[in-house]
Image (tube, rainbow, N blue to C red; front, side, top):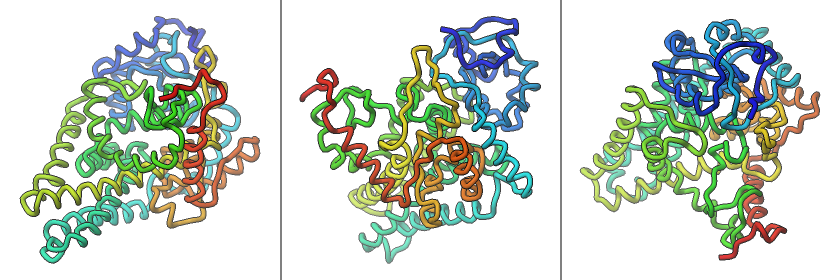
Length: 461
């Protein structure tokens, strides 16, 4: 199959022709290739020179990195640097590919860039970022210490339970803020800062930031709501829930909206176990392949899990009874899981947005930025409260087009995005409140639980 995601010059270039399987073999620091718009580049000697650090190139190696590349760079600007590393062309596709950037795509990026330039604003920094981080980590450390090291509280399980709730909420905020910001390189321009902030997820939450990077930044953000490519909507056969029309319907899905949300409380436990399976057994997260880990990532992966077990289980067991440790752990985990799961589902797993599919050649017949708009639902832009506690996920459309910009700037550029969408006739899906957005997810579950019209899609149990 001919690779569709090409620029106007790539077909005129000479060089070796690569299938995606051949490209995938070059996915290590000492042997790294990437494909962009159908052209293959040997970036092995560029990894150490990359201004954005080596991590993102190690993640992107061995695959088509077109959308990630165009997201984090000014359109067209880095082409001169790339030319010296050109070695051939990509002739087949592993995952869906997209049309070249549309006029809307170029216009909205230009307008947002001009906003920061004219106003002399750093899009990756703001004092509120560091204030929020300080509050989150203080709440996390303070609530942990209160549960196990303050005698008055240790003697009263109901007080310990309250602080376990605070700990769980702070854990969710670590995921929504330092982890999320660092995984999109949207806080400062320092790769070392990104490494440290990402690692807090491993050590404080016991979940791998590496797996998150592949699932979220290289999977979900690139292939939003595309079945078979977006790991966030991956489902089994059968699954605990039905969220896509392409899934076979089972009788178990009837009234799934009344019980599935309760199962979201298992998210944190599931993720910690799934990390190990994905990295060391399966080797991929849905269709997003995991590249070999370097020393840093291996150390953080296992060091984080060991530290998590030590401070969340072993140390508490030396202070209070096993049943209390278990109860407090479960309370905190439920809060973390529910908050993360419910806030994420309200953005994409709703009936209002689109669920695009590629054609028979693997082409999504829509510009990538336009697709981000129509696969996403925003809510409560006017609420500082909700913006703060959901990590700006209420500005998800803005975030998906501009993940490299700090979430603390979304309120400033949202009007630019919305006005440009209106100008180009692209629907911008929006709910006035969080509860309306969350209700849309529940309604989607209800509708997906109803029997399809075609009997071929039904299996009774």
